[in-house]
Image (cartoon, rainbow, N blue to C red; front, side):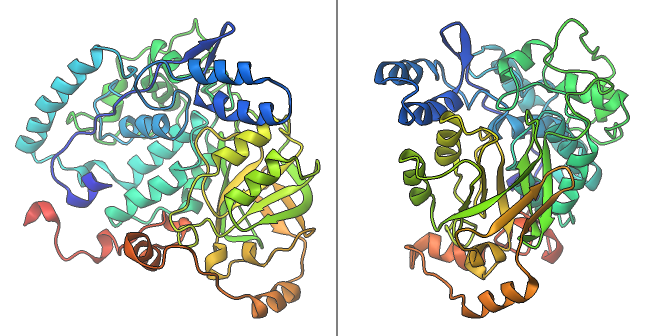
Length: 437
């Protein structure tokens, strides 16, 4: 966002993924720790096992190891053209990252010489490429916030609905955690995000004419990449894990401004059940710890949106604890907040309008029937328009605990998740660009 806002010649370099932990013969990540908390609360594992998982999950420096938010956006940095091809893949401890750091320094000087600036690279077409890579890798739902926010800095219209359309049109081909089997190191060892991009390009899903910081097009950078056949981390687009991307958008009377759900690894895409309403994540987490819910319930965590939180916190503790208790497919969760990229299961985030501004999620009561259809892309509460209108008349805004300071100021300016939860008018309102001063 800063690169695009300032439009100064620059190259993005990712810090690198953590190495996977190893426990009882399998790779584990921080996701396993959070889910182990739920398993422990359910009596499925003892104190010793929980402690062992905690001790083995994070063996090195680097960001979370699956296709969670950091690695998703690292893939985006290459797909959108702002990072050197191949630079996002090497794990953080690998010395090979030093060569990419040195090369990035050389490339940024060439960008300065040739006048290659971020807004020449970040276009509507390159944003679509980035969204396709997110979908193809079963990436983080947070990309549906970050991509519109990046677009906003450049004055490009690219909201959650446009992102969702591309997600739905793109095949899911990379079998990565949390929905799949593999971690970022595994993707790196078969060729990295370039292998995913090559598969999408050959399948007609990627625009190869978009510019990269190298001064060459994405298509030119991928010419030498050969899709490896002797691996199953990334599949050809003709044999995808699913024809629809691993992340999709929803809309309905409960989410007029949209919502996002990760469906990677899910077999059942429909859910209907009674609402179990909480006004903050902490209350929901306590209910999960005490197992104060029933199979078939739909957890509703509200007042956690951009304004209501404020700051749109992620709900990983609650979603992972639920999954660890063995509720995958048996309960659902919706929130106007966010999720970690490590979240899995029927968990819907970014519901808008948020509760803090009187959105329908703020009108729900325990027992209201909620219907979710990720196949059709719908999220509805089974209430009439008249009933929702009646409840809206008696709704009153709630105050959060941040009534002064930076978070108060943030809450006054932040917009809807529909457009990236941005806090200023963006590129369209500019009279000049910083780099031109």
